[in-house]
Length: 320
Image (tube, rainbow, N blue to C red; front, side, top):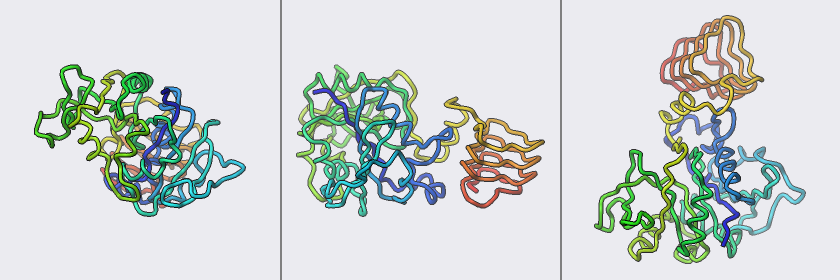
């Protein structure tokens, strides 16, 4: 069956990005002036996805202005937790937000939207992953495999937790928990799921998806698709977040709506829309979020300006 729907995982607490996530949920943290979740939606749409679901937990009110409201904004009891879902659109595509007052984890979040998923396969995409990988290849691999799950994997990276069989199309172990093999590949946080897989997840429970993945690996039914082409970045921690702004060129470093006063010196820094950098400030390898301010003559190195308080003085490696 063709995969035309996607579930964006947006309900995490964002602990590795604190204090930035005290202001915004991690998927709404800006990357080159756009929320991380929007980059994920765009990657899925480029692969042919037509409808989206997204789960929320931390700071749910921050999602109120994401996407466009529909004429009927709620769908009663759309989630298995009995809560109404918020129906919106993104670039003309259906976008349904499912709130989790109690965090359900990756498995519980999937089970919660089982009625939304219906009888079709779904692409699952972590909300803090930036990728230009050819996801259409993952969809095609899943559609042709007949397997319950197909994981997008990478050959290179630090967290090589997955062991693959000789064909490279099956995962045989995860973190060595089955005692079969050491890991050789990285799990990208992007995968396809067929409806039958939801039957392996308990209802109404806070549960990760990994135990069900291990059961499939044990049975030789956990598929993999190697996607080494393109960029893949897990932006869940501060170092990766800063590095992405230094190394990627996803848009203008200075947003056209930013105000940069006279005598400002910017090196490898990104300034968002509505932000103001006052006269004489120096920014190196730093990020200024939309609407934030840097005081006159401030000197910032490897800093993120994210609060409503103007950042002044000299700082290195701080979130202000």
